[in-house]
Length: 132
Image 1 (cartoon, rainbow, N blue to C red):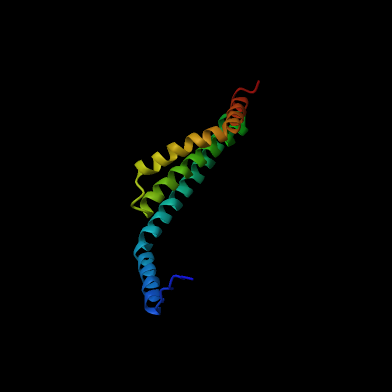
Image 2: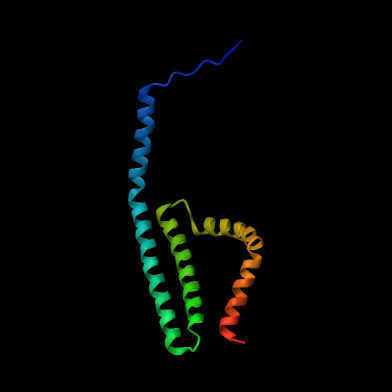
């Protein structure tokens, strides 16, 4: 019976691999921190915009629930934009073109999967705006 011979693993090879991984992580750490800072800035900006839209709608509108809905939509939009920009900052190989092409392909699948959910969301927003 022929059995393949196992390659002997030397501790120096293991150490070299672990050392290379640690050095790679440490070289990427400043970019990861910069990406985290960008994301936190967008998080604060999105929270402020959401509160501002909700406060504006509470003062100017007779339908504060519509303001809450638009505030949440603005929050989600800014958070998605912040996540995309933070990913571009943290991982330089992720360019906006690559990111949006991946989102475009995934967007078709997500669109078909969540078609009914999106229809109900838009119908709810129209009900909030028009108040029939």
